[in-house]
Image (tube, rainbow, N blue to C red; front, side, top):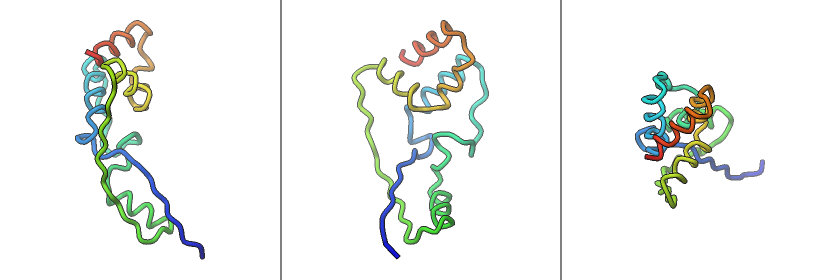
Length: 113
């Protein structure tokens, strides 16, 4: 059998990914929607290292190692931050999908502020 390596990058817990949590907290405040329930599909669904390892082992992988790597996100402006959060965090786009275009723009401006 051939040996190889497979790597995957997943988001950590919400407390460690502030660009998503800060953005979504503002959306919750502006729209009065309910917070995303824990363990829901979304950017944090694989944040639990034990679950992630278990999933790989159940899939037949051996010697599974998980390594946490800190990443720093640097953007050139608050507008760039808002655009990045909107375009990369699917729950953000979903939460705003039923807003009118004008209201969505107001919420995105509130995030930028």
